[in-house]
Each structure stands twice: as structure tokens, then as C-alpha cells.
Length: 435
Image (cartoon, rainbow, N blue to C red; front, side, top):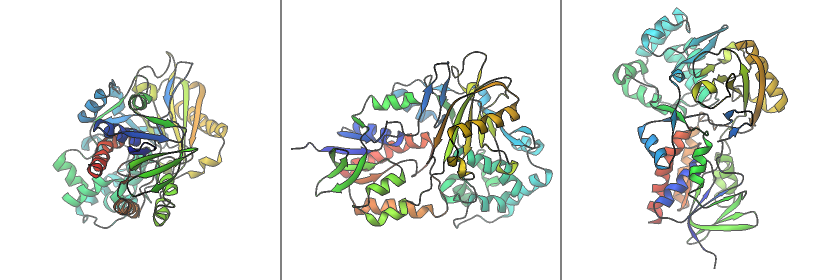
């Protein structure tokens, strides 16, 4: 008779790995299946020329609780250099530091005086209750310049997203809650002294793949075994794989929304259309080696209104030691996203050429070499207007099919830190069902 696991986790990204690990800690027998390699979008490359770079998530924004969690996994987090606090926005040929205080905001050339005065409209606006786009909210409360040179670049850095489509409620839930509570975000800042997320930027000496390896070494994993469909029996689920099947009393779908939709076609066909609505724009990442002086900082964001062909550049070798050999700098360049989805029509060679041309023109560096290009045809899920219906569908399916659970970066936050915090929460839900 085929052995039945307590839980089968489908998907080996950080969400799936963390959930499986937490369930195992609670004493359950867990099997994780992954169609490719575990790690999901984490893609750390150790180059033979002495470079270490990330082609997926770059860092983790970690608070003390999360730091302790990582240390319990046997990891040794390293903090980004103090220079990481310096972030730049490109405007009319200049790299302007993103203001970090009200005084610096008032003296910064990032916005015109008219743009600065418009920001104070926020004090006289009513809180938003209905669902609107981030762009609609920012225009109404802070003005067009603030949208173009502060908010839109920030959202391109987090989501590679389009503020005209991203939902204020779902893409920026903390801002939505604060403006509801205080009436304006300026008042919220004055009360709480901080609106931006707290924490330290961290990585590991061997890159984020150390996190993947720490989880993988503690779990039972089937790699290269993609799930084809899920069947429900009276007391268990069967997950059909290529050439075999695994069974469990519960199943956690920790795969992208489009993959989850495919697995639900027979079990809950009416949920498929809603999950397939989740948009994952293409995003290209290029790792570049250069010589020359770079600003001391995290990197530069490029507002769409400036007309550049790239979203942002990270000064990767400025952030953590061991990222580049002596005498060289490592840059990570991002192209595409929701505002320029045509990047997936380019070859890797064309993407490399665009990245190189932009960096040479903007930074005046020498001896540029493109180390690697990776195109994510489906990158970061977009929490766009109407996203609530996706989450309602997830909730409804979990109620209708007891023992089936969902997790992933399309539910409850897109960052690696979000995935790590979500793992214990999902594990507790599954444990409550299993008893």
C-alpha cells in the first residue's frame, strides 16, 4: 500500500521551502515536489572570474525576529554596507539622493518648489476608502511630480510595476491603512515618525542560495518532478507527477498563480479563470562588470518620465564584500517590467547591448563586460486593481476543499522576507486542519 504523507507541498520557492520546514518542525511528515530546481526566483551565480551575483531577489529586508530565525537555520547573515542607505533617483542627467528626512526633502532638487508645495495637499484630503490605483491616490494627495519621481520609481523597484494599475489596497496595504487611520500620510509620519518598512538589508557570504540550501538540506524534496494534477479522495489527496504520484492528507500549493490554476482545472474548475488573471510581467536582469568610480550607495532608479531604457541599476559590489574582484565593480541592471513588457521580444544579446549602452552613457565607466543576462518571462506578480477577487477565490477554495492550502508571493507580499514570515503562518493553518 502506498504511504501517505501528512502534507505534500507543491512548489520549491522560498514560500514552499519555508512552509515545508515549519510543518516538519511541528512533527509532520512532509514531501516537497518541484518541477525544476528548488529556490524559485532565487538564482545566485558564482562566476569563475571572481564575481558573485544574483539574477533574482537581491537582498532581504530583515528585522531582529527574522535575523534570529535565519541564525536558527545555521546561517550567518551579513549586513549591507552603510552606503546602502544612499539611494538615488535619476533626473535630467543627475543622480539625486532620495531625501531621507523632511528637511532634506525641502532642500532637495528632486522636486520643483511647486512639486514640493503640492505634497501638502495630503493634509487637506479625505481618507480613501474605495479601491483606487496607487497613481490615483498619489496624484490626489501629493501631486504629479511626487508620483513621477518618488512613488513610481519605488514601485518599479519593488514590483517592476505600473502605478496606474497597482492597487493602493493590495500593493501598498500599510499606506492604505495609515491614511485610513490618520486621515493623511503626512499626519501618519508625524505620529509614527516612520512610514517606510523597518529593518536591515542582509544577504549571506555565498548569496541568497545559502538560504535555499539551508532549507533543502532539512527536507525531503523531489526535484524535476512537476505536478500535473491534483485529485481529492475521502481522506487524502493524490498529486500526479510525471511517471508517479505522491499522496498526502493535506496539500499546500506554493507555486505561481498560473501554475495553481492549471492544477485546479479538474478539482475546482470555476477558480481557474480568476487565478489566471494574476499578471506576471517580463523582467530582464543583467550582471555587468565595470571599472570606474561609482556613487557610494545602493543604486539608482530611473523614472519612466525620463525616457531611459532601464528601470534601475544596483551597485552590487558596494553593498556586500566578495561580490567582485579587486579593481572591478559589479552592477546589476533591471529592464522591462509592467511599464515596458516588450523586453521579452528581445534576445539576450539585445538586452545585453541595451544594458551596456545605458550604463556606459550614464556612468562613464570603462572596460564594461556583460557577465550574464537572465530574462524572467513571468517575474513578479502584480497586485493590480481588482486583486481582492483573487484573494477571495483563494479563501473560497480553501473552504470548499478542506485540506488544500495556498501560499506564494502572489498572496500576502512579494518579497523574500514576506515569504519567510508567511511560512509559519501557513504551517499553523495546516496543523489546525491535521490536528
